[in-house]
Image 1 (cartoon, helix red, strand yellow):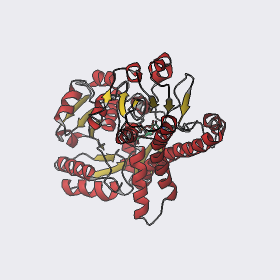
Image 2 (cartoon, helix red, strand yellow; image 1 turned 90 degrees about the vertical axis):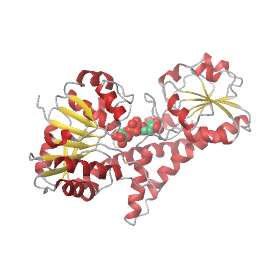
Image 3 (cartoon, helix red, strand yellow; image 1 turned 120 degrees about the horizontal axis):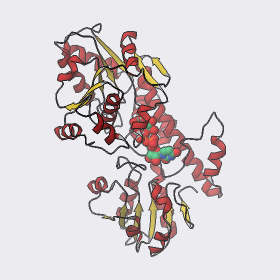
Image 4 (spheres, protein in one colour; image 1 turned 180 degrees about the vertical axis):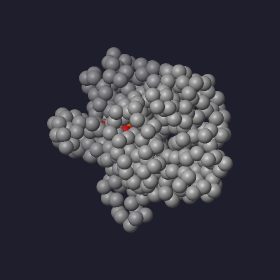
Length: 426
Ligand code: UGA
């Protein structure tokens, strides 16, 4: 096993999974994280986020090949420093690069008195040009070094939340962007035990590959949702349609599940950032804007269907099952349940919500609605029920629906197996 000395700046979801998995692969890793609570948790082997399989790997490697720190001391002896800090959206949809810039400056300061060749690699999702125009100058300015002494690369992540460890350890491709082959070669070395194809590109192409991948997947979903909406009007099962369509290898069967739309910390943010990037270049990104518009419309279709079934929502008790943006996570960022609950509350409905994992997070967004400790409790006495997340446990619900006052069930994800359910687009 080939072992390298690595630092990963950012102990969030990407940084923590990346750092832990690199340690599992045999590398010596320091995660640099500004939040002392997270640092303590990582060093205690307790993941500050829920991610399938992460706790095991963290416990196995912490204190041996993996550690976390609030300081940048490990950088000067690292062969590679990965930047995995957040790029949250600004009010206009463009990516906020302030954390990228400050991490780059701190890395540069830490490299000031070091002599070995180090490669700074951007893992965060960033607009094309960021590594060259923001990271490189900030690192070189703060370190006083030349670009012959420090290399730069861009290596996007393709990790699905909830399945990130699996995706990291068994990737379908590894993209390494660099302007100088020496930097790219070093990054390729860190992945040498992976079997996936490695694609070497320029810096900006690697940055663009990440945005384009997410935008394409989001487009598949909005496309399926639009077809689903048409199918519902025509009384056609969109899932049968997409099964037939997805058998064409040019299309593929994945990400064609129609429903309440895409949420999470990536698709909505990355498509918005690409729209704003396109506009900066003078383009009018009609297709990408429509992808977002369809996505915004889907949750409101749930409300429209509900009103069609039960009339005014004022004073009605509505059970909302599923708060996380998808199953197997407690993450509610941009969850489609948020606009649904918002509209229900505005229209005077009494909401009772249930989710196997995400209640504490949703309580911070909607402290005033009611939360239940089980689906059965949320359904008891409800006038209607909306299913917002594809949690497998919902597929086993059956008799629990008999506890409702009126058995009006509308699902935004095709997950229920009992009779009498109406789908958002089926
Ligand atoms: C997504 C990508 O799938 C990853 O490849 C990428 O690395 C990651 O973003 C990122 O940029 O970091 P993630 O946000 O974890 O991963 O979630 P997905 O599993 O892709 O699902 C996103 C949303 O789309 C969920 O709300 C899900 O319910 C919805 N979805 C997904 C559909 O509505 N229909 C589908 O057919 C598939």
